[in-house]
Image (cartoon, rainbow, N blue to C red; front, side, top):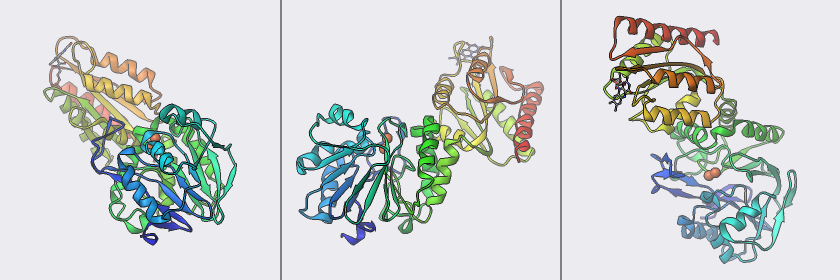
Length: 398
Ligand SMILES: Cc1cc2nc3c(=O)[nH]c(=O)nc-3n(C[C@H](O)[C@H](O)[C@H](O)COP(=O)(O)O)c2cc1C
Ligand SMILES: [Fe+2]
Ligand SMILES: [Fe+2]
């Protein structure tokens, strides 16, 4: 068992898989589940890096014991206090009463607040080290990735970064837990969806964290969600770097809210023109059908965004309204925005879209299109012109 859980040196994987939960944070669907990763360093001094969701404590404890038997754990290093990782803290403390919690000055208030645990603290500051015998750990404070206490722990000996939620992805680890032992196909899209929805607002904090990590010789990424990355670590770092700079690929997301399909026909006309103009990455999302987490992920992926809404009780279509608020919350930048609306007796959606466009940090492209009731020759022409303007703007960046 012990060797099967080994990553490198004396570091073992002791995380668990959640295939039961429907919504992560009560919000985000988990079609492939999620893993809560924890790592055990079986050195002269034994250290546990993060814990797991409390529902999985028994499985977790069994995994720990199959590595260290009856030996005590000396340190619990807390990179992140969100309960998907700290949930087993109280029970770990009950089973290992002499364990010393390692955290930074933001950590311990949360340890007490969530679990009522006070007692001995091993308080670290940025750059401090902890020698376990073979492994030598250094701590890097990375606040707001995506909570204030978040930090990363670097193992100087083997080049392993224990990165907390940084570099995380949705998806369970079925069999293998390292990219060298598992098919990683599902994780790339799930990484973008994880990042854009959970961490997306904190791009500048992620950039600061990446700057701190840049001088380190990283061989292995041990995040708290998704695979341990060895062979494909550079691709993972590159994805997090590009997403945290809000850098999109050439492509357009067209998202629309419709009741009877007329507004959808505007989206189709715009999409057709984009493709005629040579844009291949075009994704149409009906906001009613697609969960917003997938739409947000695609908006992080592509540089072009075109939003359409039917007028609803003198307002935006409700689900479009909600999506716009999610976009603003994430403080997104570097997008080209086009928009369109429809109405039957008195136009309102377009006006509200205009307010959104002003609040956003996006570059407006093309002339917004408003449609009365259904498609006319003029609407087709206007939609075509909007598609053309977006295509031309995107092609300027080639
Ligand atoms: C519940 C409801 C509320 C509506 N409110 C308005 C409104 O306030 N002003 C208006 O001009 N049209 C209103 N409409 C009409 C739609 O905005 C209009 O028919 C639109 O073109 C529908 O687009 P769709 O075919 O894509 O659903 C409303 C329709 C419904 C069903
Ligand atoms: Fe988190
Ligand atoms: Fe997490």
